[in-house]
Image (cartoon, rainbow, N blue to C red; front, side, top):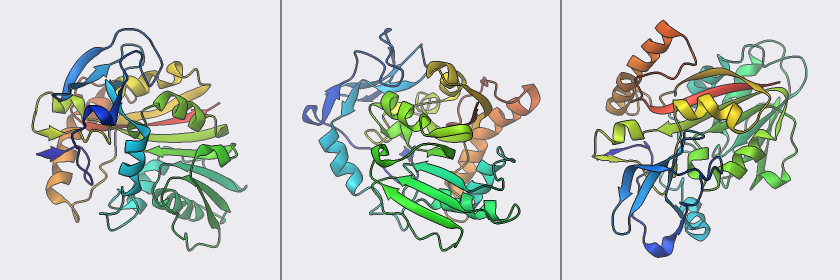
Length: 305
């Protein structure tokens, strides 16, 4: 069995563990009919339903809040660190390539939504210090995990359990591998986007596993951890779907979160699957929705106007 997530496995749910979510798309709130594109489990039946409005595919039945509270309370218990990236520093360099003018002469604020212990945001803040004169960076981490110590005098981090205690106006919003976990993604996305200040960047990364799962049936899409599949079409429509004043800077197959040092076979497979799509974009232009969709994950960078 091949798992969509490098760090977790899916599980089977009973009728007492979920709520019916077929009435409308939980991502864009469209009431247009959605067609089933993938059977997650049988008896009770749960399908992934494709939305023709926003392009996301979402589970027909969503795990109940009390189930998710128990599930995510132990989310990082089997991992050696409080995040799912093999190398946060490498991921930080990757994110910053699309934001060459992010670091100025004024203090910066980063919102890291669902970032575990904040390692990606901290790595980004540390790399920004190397671009010129050191600039104070404040990180607001929204997660159930405790933030780790940045160990940098110019970087500070504040932990929050939810967005209610976060004051907006951030210069960078990180939503890396998090929207796919949230049943009511529509409300959360609007709240996260609302934290961005003028001229802010947003980086988001999500699974785009269903094109592969429909071909290779021995794939665990890790439901109920992943209740949405958000790929090239979704991110291509994202700004229009949520009525944002923003520009799409980059839309491409996502960063490979594992490394050859930690998971050589999985990492090689990931690079191999993404290569045709990346080559297609290089030849035909960036930000295009490619014909080759078997990439495993997708990412997008936006800049708010």
